[in-house]
Length: 255
Image 1 (cartoon, rainbow, N blue to C red):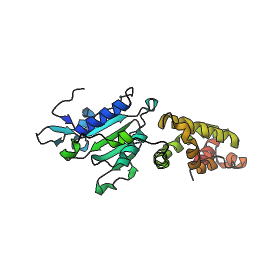
Image 2 (image 1 turned 180 degrees about the vertical axis):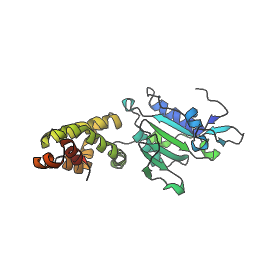
Image 3 (image 1 turned 90 degrees about the vertical axis):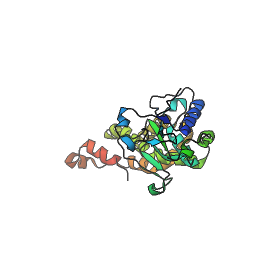
Image 4 (image 1 turned 45 degrees about the horizontal axis):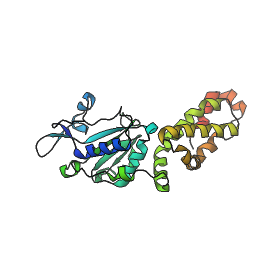
């Protein structure tokens, strides 16, 4: 693809895009983007998708890229985000994905994942902004994060991604069992349901290797499973002051 000269994307982002496309040639690109659309343009310099920065020749430079989440083809943005963060590449300004933001700048809790409260939760794509120094944003050396990638066999890599996904997994479990809890299922039925919901959620978030992570996930969800399998409130309490739906909601709240 031929990119315009003014404005233009930062060269390091073109390198990253080439690496991603090479690694996942059949991936979806519906949420890909660099040069901002009308909605981004309305944000002015608040969005790095706009060419508010200028290079040594006076050309506008876009310093942000969005990469589409496509677990069906192996591109999982939780993996990519973790790999980029782990690399601590000197070109990274900040990363946003799955309601989390990691910023490299000293004034923003550098290299620590923090909650992200923007209107777009970035669950369908990863956003990467790069720094404003031209010698860095035009550094075309390969991104080691794409070379080393995510090691499913590495305990620390796996735990880091699980921690990032855990809030969404818990939410999915709660939503998935709410109706069944109204029917007051047995302990075995709830355990089977939790396993099914977690497995389904992981297959969409983690990708084809989800089954290998279920043991570790189950351990981290022990407190939720204990809550869901606790003895139900006496029927008299439900009849006198609490509807079955309200009792279900209360039972599903995390400790």
